[in-house]
Image (cartoon, rainbow, N blue to C red; front, top):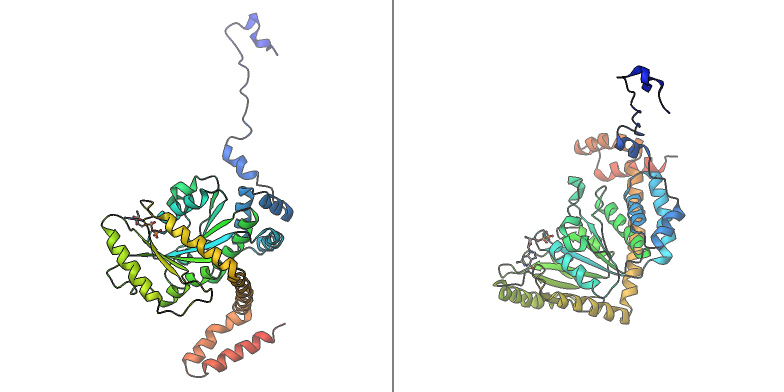
Length: 363
Ligand code: GDP
């Protein structure tokens, strides 16, 4: 509308048209205020089954959440996804820091995706418990895979006990499978209990080794050797090739000394170079041959059944333990009881029994 002051008689004065105000001075404020609408259980399931990676990620976040209301939804989503899960080959990949896990997984991933399908890379990282940040599964460590349209990389859940973290990874496997991921890598650092956790959720356990100083068995804990379905000696490139071959031979000899595995499969040892992409195929020929072998002799399904049982009991144990230690009365009494034991006024067993009795008597 023409302003009266803009008329001839007010010469020298003009009134400008006003400036349109933005909805918000701080654009971020609005974003923050508009929260993502909460998805329902069926939204999650539908999104996941359709292969929607955004929904999958959100569901995994829910699985990892410690909040009881998130857990309740997560458990329902997992249960509804179960009928769609199971159609994958799950491969555990372990090795000490510096063995070349991330370099290798980048190459392994490209290799297994060459023939199509979808790959999820998950991780179990016990160190993240302390650092509250995850080292494994970091996207930046897998440059090629992280931009691959058919790869989904998820770092290790960081909160909770190793058992808890491992359970979350196992549940994430279910979601990924329901989303159509037919190859699952579970990475872990080869330093202790985490291999057992990974071993209990995969079909093939690959141990990445380095050629050492000749005494190859030295750095390898016996238990880990026994878990491995295959050992791959990395960094077999350049001058390192003869050393890697020698290491492979000595490992092969050592493996003969172990009792024959239940699967009927004798673990193999191969050499390769993750960095230069050499002999990657040898590693995967070994894996697929194993999968064929155990599918035919029934061990594949047997192992999965055993794992399901293992996780059922693990979950019961974990829940009983948490129930006990999180009980307000018990946790208040623990310190005092510990003092009595240390002071020699009570034996460890009597003290434990007394607390357990008390816990059982609680309403
Ligand atoms: P991770 O800690 O097990 O994940 O190991 P990384 O993948 O980060 O590798 C550790 C180091 O070893 C890096 O500096 C890599 O560049 C190097 N590396 C990994 N694979 C190879 C390989 O096949 N050959 C050589 N020469 N170096 C490698």
